[in-house]
Length: 355
Image (tube, rainbow, N blue to C red; front, side, top):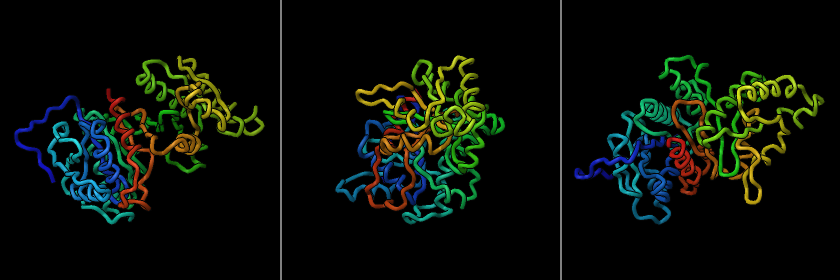
């Protein structure tokens, strides 16, 4: 473990970015170690919220590839991250976190440690002590074993933000956006069963999602985003032949959004709208983002274009949070073969969103 020399004072050039360690039995810690090794410029001013031995083990996994050094640097506050030399892992340890769990095994201890790291980083962001947080993947079953009442990061962060603001959870609506260089998609519903997701396709839900999407992307793009809305049914209902949700629910929500000044179009056939919103060489995008009616409808197209470049962004929070577009990958954890590209992209996007 590397400690900062006494003569090196923290010299921040802006607020730092926290990266939570994720589930220590998965690939999160080793992708973090790889990111600090492979993209030191992009990771400057970032630090890891986690447990020292977990990050030391991750560094050892990365060193199997022939590297000679990837030391862990213990820091006492976020600003010290700016003074850690390149290709070191700045770790802000949380007291009482358990050490690393066996690779690829679901455990209560790993779930509890992952949740505590997220809670600390969320509070630090809400209090303005850090610029943003980037969350390494956690495991939903491990969270449940730890007694965490939320199915994932998005819901956990929503609860933390609502508590900080002193408002009810329903007064802190959030949405998930998955994005890469080619495509952005925002979801009406997130981690619910498909039958429940269909029930969530209501005019208020769609209008709220459009409002959150418009507000978030207008800040990022510096202009009103052009939003495409996917239909729920095949061919967007085909004029009511394959379902009336488009006619009775989605179209009224779009009209209400337009009345509020939003640039919204659709509903379009779900099997073609994502191609129209894709930005590729020789194929400029027609739309800045697609509003998808449920989780898999929106995430499959983005992930198909490359998990290694996708970034998950939580919209609607009074903080900046991004994460890589993959899970814990227990099947390959500890082998040193996990790709850190998505984590690096998540850090870059977090920095961009934080300004």
